[in-house]
Length: 151
Image 1 (cartoon, one colour):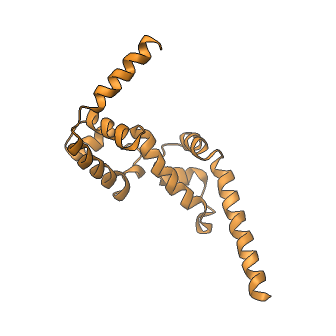
Image 2 (image 1 turned 60 degrees about the vertical axis):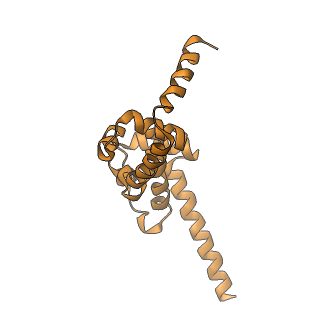
Image 3 (image 1 turned 120 degrees about the vertical axis):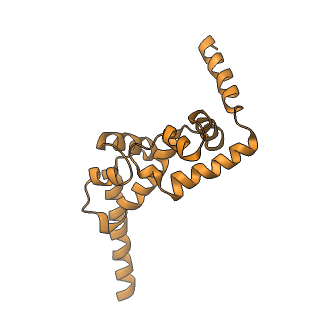
């Protein structure tokens, strides 16, 4: 193991131990409230620093809690919820006329490129491919349902 890797591993362990377990649980709930319930993930520039300010703590604590409790970094956590909402929008026929750029903006991405990159990484396909797959699946199911009703 390289010296840098060993050092970063030790730093990581001490970094997470900055926050007492009880406080970590409280912050985890508050983070979920802000990110998921209040849908702060939709705000394009909502940073860990801003979340820390809103929660009356510091960004190191936020990072420690997110890394420990969610097993990812802050950006990955926010992007997870952005993609989850994008999946709902892209599979809903009433939104089929929306551009991919519009969907990206609705869920909090700053631009199309970052949306595509994160989407592809999480879903192993592009948003366009996903939308097409979902809408074709709905059409197939509607056709099968119509056939069953008339039979």
